[in-house]
Image (cartoon, rainbow, N blue to C red; front, side):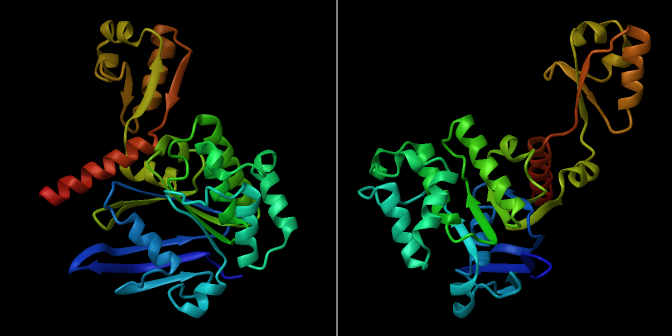
Length: 302
């Protein structure tokens, strides 16, 4: 087994002279989940195609499980699963027929098909036509196809779009199980609040450039965004205390505390106001993401 499941080093990809990717690098270990984030047109799809071997970089290097995925001989043998954003399925087949078809193409036996249907809670609907499946069921069937061959690398493009909270939770539970088996996962998504608590690291793209990369802890340390402190009656407390007023944000109805000021604020709430019930929320992934995009835009304008 190679040290890294996926390695991208200084990847550049041009279309008609325009850089769709400009020097992007990443390293993903086995069992880790990477969130691939960015606005539409940021270069996410281009990067995914490089990892899948559908395109070659004009500069830089891509390796999946230690091999160049763009070489035809490697691509056929690489253990990669992929779920596109828009799942295209054969609606006139049953769920069982569809998975059996894909299994036969890959030389996979019927037992594995049954196992995956059970795993993704589709066994009860395996004899129904796919056209009768709900959005969540179709997404699970697409995921079933992607994991049928027990991939060591799995790429999911907007897997939770249109899913209700229960279906989204179920999908991430399945992903967690795959990661425990050593599968490296890349999820491309705009649903930042959902992926926040699941990812090991994030790669944020803007106009083909990597504008931020690292674990949530690393990104918080780098961006130094304020911590949110929620307290019942925060507006009243701020109205009676000048020090608290300086930290109170009326739009947020909470105290937005700069790095290094959290401890003094909490001590003041406790010792001066007898407040012991408060909620401390560190900067979230959506906040970090929007700060990165704002900085990227400011640099572009400058």
